[in-house]
Amino acid sequence: MIDPICKLALGLLTGFFFGFLLQKGQVTKYRVILGQFLLRDFTMLKIMLTAVVVGGFGVFALLDFGLVESLHIKPMILGSVITGGAILGIGMGILGYCPGTLVAAIAEGSRHAIFGLLGALLGAVVYAEVYPLFESTLLKMGDFGKITLNGLTGGSPYLHLAGIAVLTGVLFCVIELWERAGTAGKKADG
Amino acid sequence: MDWSKSYKFFQQCAWSPYLVGALIGVLSWFAIATVKPLGASTTYVRVVGFAEKAVVPSHVAENLYFQKKSPKVDWQMLLMLGVFIGAALSARLSGDYHVERVPELWKRRFGSNVWKRYGAAFLGGFLLLFGARLAGGCTSGHGISGSLQLAVSGWVFFATVFVAGVATALALFGRQRSQS
Image 1 (cartoon, chains in turn green, orange):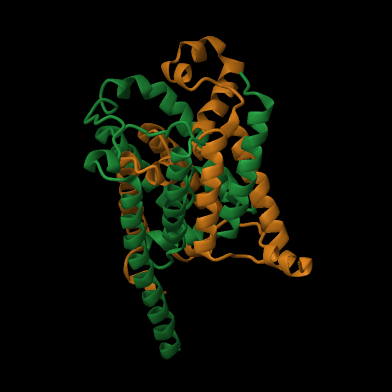
Image 2: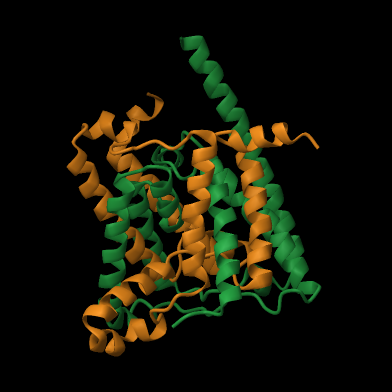
């Protein structure tokens, strides 16, 4: 029913920093998330991809030093990951928040996020009811197990992360140049 | 150390997204080294599990999904409480707290009717959580935590959400308005 108190305290502390950072990153705002999906504001991608690169190097290093026992890989089930991801993406496009930033958005005054939260809770209720329908269908379809990029190629995880870092760096450069050209163009128009 | 300067830093409305991303990356080291990777959407299941248990305990006991994700106060539930407190503090420090009933972008396209927006937000929230549970994770659990561990599921999820989000936003707001 309840986790040990020290584990709960760690959760509260981790969440506190997570919420603080999400708010300072502005991804707690409808216009920033919609701006990303309309390809006008790339804040969300910048934050997520930087977190993945920095997080990845550190987590694999912790694993090598024995400070992390094992990774927590979720299975690649084509049926459920793609269907679920698509439904979540549509919901996020309408709502303008994800399950984590939804709570942070309420904390910074978004009232419509409260209705989003109520919808999300109903979504959880309904999912629990219909889960048996998916258990033998979508959740079994195209199950490749807990596969990883480095496992597939047999290469070093650091090499993959370095590759991702380079691609991400190139993408960021293109985005920055595009954003600068955009603001310069607007100034010229005005 | 100049404390007034560092305090001003915390009063800023927005930090560089690269700095925020890097710090979330560091936070993910802490989370995984102490307990487990960052995630959010399981908490919604545990919360409704508690609520349903209070009304119809036998139903919750028999439900297959609640047997997997039993109602309990766990690390992630406290994490979500922390997210609320952290975001509230950040917004208060910078004066970024403001009541938003209908976002500007939405208002320009669909008008300022509050209930229309609340209804859409409710529907969006429903799809958001239903999709997250079907996929087995959300933007945090799959998108950030999965991808950084090089899980194929994380990257496939990330790409799918992005494509679906772009398609939805374009369907709602149209391409021609994207420069306004």
